[in-house]
Length: 276
Image 1 (cartoon, helix red, strand yellow):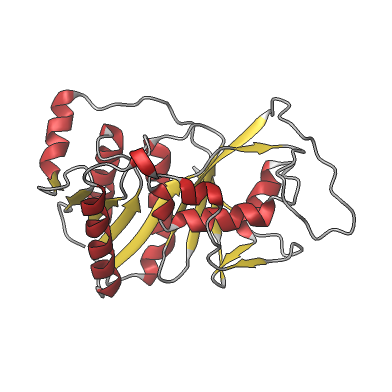
Image 2 (spheres, helix red, strand yellow):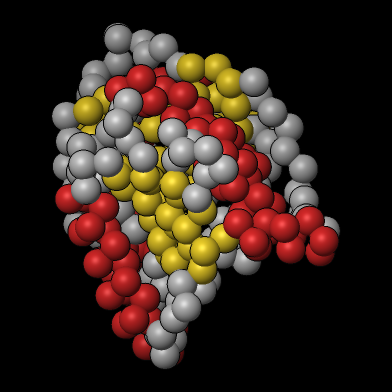
């Protein structure tokens, strides 16, 4: 079950473009983190992304989760527009409530879609968020036949994660879309488009006290990226950790996956049983 967030218009919109990556982001993936196939993976990402953006029947999205948000009167070391400084706790006091954010960004249009859970960050959480996004967008995309998903190699969505692969096969069959999962190299997730969106969102809410779940959701829903307001949903499902697919069932799923010969873990295509 999911609840769509209706924004509180008393909050000021916060407009952001693509911010420069912080030093922490820029330093990610340097030196020994580079793998032998990194250059080939990047070349594949750039080529497929360019083809997807130029294709009239293809849409590219960037999808990822973000670090858990502690709900409460905690300092996030940001700045607000208030006349007086906001009083906040300067360290974690074992928060009673937490929210896990997941997000989908359409890099070309700037459309963004966030989904939150108070449960665990799992493959099923990401897949449910993807389906919610599609249900929001499908009426506006009647001619769409292919979707390219930019991903990093997080444990919930890697090219080895059996439950995630199963859910992507299910998504392809339900929607009738051909799904192509294009992964960035390990330790280089900063290049995934949604990372810039996350940086903007953090900047927008770090000067405020995220005291309740409603405040978090409304702050997110009032965030505007490239002149487009974010759509926000709260998923109320309880997610189990460590869900895996048995070997026999996984063999059937693998038969549905068209893996790249050269980059089998970084370029995976799924064709639906019935084309849309």
